Image (cartoon, rainbow, N blue to C red; front, side):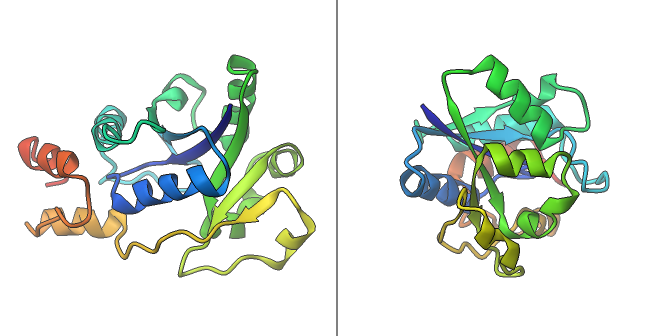
Length: 192
């Protein structure tokens, strides 16, 4: 099986994340996209508004309920921290030798890819599906790597940061997240 690996803090997950996964299924001929909830991103400062990893994972689970080929994963919770993508890919290769893994990243991450641990090994051994972000271009060096695929995805004009601000101000987030997520955020008073 071809599995897309889409890692992130998903703080919280929103409709853009789901649209991206759905697009990648077809564009990259994937059987599934695994949403790997990151407990800690090595390139991001620890954030005071980062929801507990188990709560974020739960939100991803409920968000993907109606999408059988999009799978919530807490795989990185059981690996050494911080969670470096190369380390995760190495473990996945051992635990799931029957699968081919395709890394899904944003154009903003591609721009700082040279800062990733073992980035050269990832470039040599994995397909990488990149979704351009409006705030970052695609670096020119990528043309030298046939395993890097630039995928046009639907633009959703919302970010997790904006959603957290909206929740703090009591604004309605239902247009931007699956109904189950809005319900959980309200019921448990998350991000307040």
